[in-house]
Image (cartoon, rainbow, N blue to C red; front, side, top):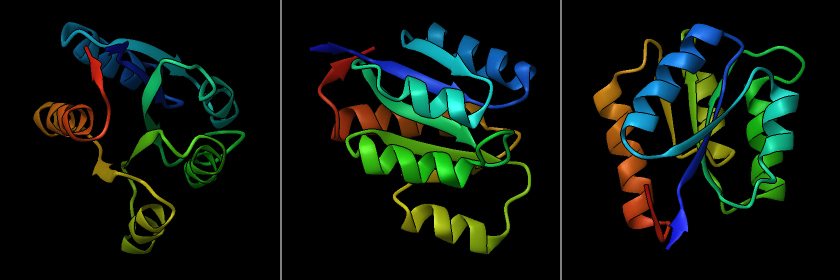
Length: 127
């Protein structure tokens, strides 16, 4: 089995730290990105399986991050998150290939369940 690496992208350092701490406790390897450009660059990491990205980020908005990742790395599963999420935006994210769209503040139980489901159903990895 391969290593389970997750990328978290958000402009808010506090959110990055909280989500990273949560997922590291669950046994995942976690890397972070502070903006969309950094997220797309780090998507090339071979052990990466899941990307959790904020919708509203500097330099490269979340929908553009999603679009680029799905174009160049279609095997990655992308969970979108936002504190401002109109239904039209959620619909677009899902149409572009997002696995799901979570509203902030993130419910740890829901996030953990979705990540576990991704690894159990789609990816042959272990945390």
